[in-house]
Image (cartoon, rainbow, N blue to C red; front, top):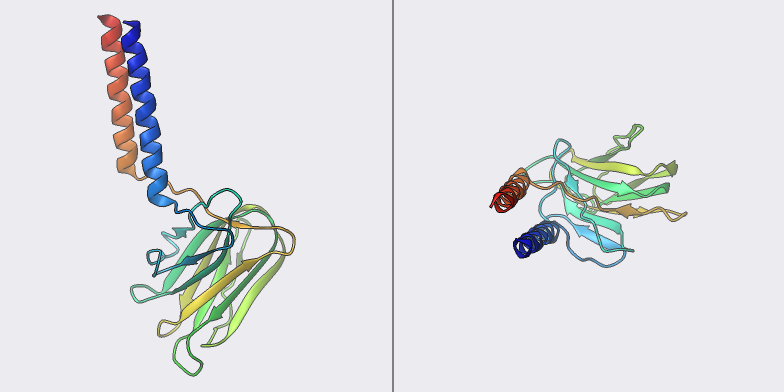
Length: 197
């Protein structure tokens, strides 16, 4: 009986470890220090304000320093949510479309305390930014909206006192939670069956 209980505990441990490894590997990609989130090329098209894209968690000691992408063609908003470690917050955004071409964009930053923006329209070749003396640690959302056409953009993050843009862990999908919960219930039922025998 004791041998069965040990096997059952080992099975439960292996199941928990394999599920957690499956979920984290599906959503996090190992990227090096000062990483660039390349929206639309390496990463999927960003979500909107109702369903923002969470910048993935990076390896220990690594942070996000840049986002590149373009808002369209399927929507008018790219929204990115990230964790700010706290400190002076510097953000610069540039409309990288060819000067003279069509396509303007604006941006806003949503903080735990207030909303900054929208910015004035950035025409092709223009840049603008936000330089805040101190942003408290917390979850922030950057929204980029295009006024016309679909201009590409580059966002740079920085700080003069050590603040970092970090990724946020993604929330497991409901099907993963149902699968995991069903497995745990099955193991509990099996445990009670072994105890009664």
